[in-house]
Length: 112
Image (cartoon, rainbow, N blue to C red):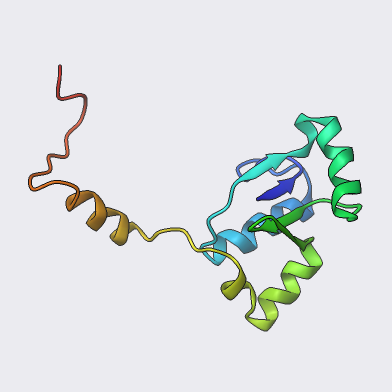
């Protein structure tokens, strides 16, 4: 989970933008929360994590850190071992194709 300013599509600060770029470059599967959308979460998370700035990256419920820490993990190669990867398109397609003995991919709804 990435607590950030804005969203991955529209980051509202340079640090959040850099964090998203790093995670996407490494194919990390992540969700995000815009800390501007809830002031109580924004202030409460600082105390909860004992980390005063954003963005904040959590993996499996544990705080990894902010942008500087993630950059260090990237440089050392550890980021790829810590963060879960998103499923590759080829794997997703194979899974979909094998869901049933016969699969039909079509536009629209089969009831119509």
